[in-house]
Length: 330
Image: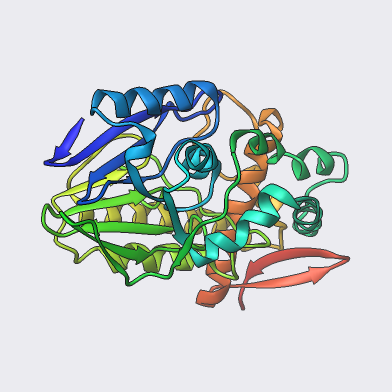
């Protein structure tokens, strides 16, 4: 699908995912094409991306530069395969994301162990811990690993020869997440930072920093005064109304904090207890029926909200008998 002259969207299928596809964007340059995000490494995804390029009269060797918004496997997973097929293609990612590749995809056992310790301290029961600690391991099959050729930091402008692409550091969903702004057509490529309907996952974990939700909300508001005609996310569909959508996300997170605050006003609770009691948009399943991966996401999102509230001064964090608990201040 053409977004603007020389700017196209390719829908890359994401089998065995709760999301149907990834929106890969290709942008014409003077010496070659630029690709934003790749999809993950499965035969269907590779075939879908290849077919999308063929429809544009392109092949992988026409890609001069890949830019990944972050290194989650549905965005980064095909990068290594593309480099195999087109060795001259350059890969760019934020320096923070660069630093995560080895610990997440190569020497991952230490990260897995540390996540287990974090989940345990936040109240995950012993009988649930092994499955929850290992819940992210299946995604290792969906990435072909390569290291970036150069780092991004935010603030750079990449000149394709036809368009200028401004790199904007937007941490939250991932520490080194970036958005990309194209000012001539007022296009904002948002990766997983902003969607028209779903709410981006923002979790507290051992590599997230101490206030990932605070980082995410700050990053959202950094974007709101950009002159944007169309928002181009990595999932769902393109949309207009950037400021309005940011306002909706603000309200969502304020409501979530209010719900948590109410639960802990009488006595301290662990994040596990709170996650099990608040409202999640997962119909027809009780908490005990959630798969381990969904429970883990819910718990780490809950911690992100609680830590933001702690930094805002409305609640406090306690440690009792080796468990972290939260309660209202006063």
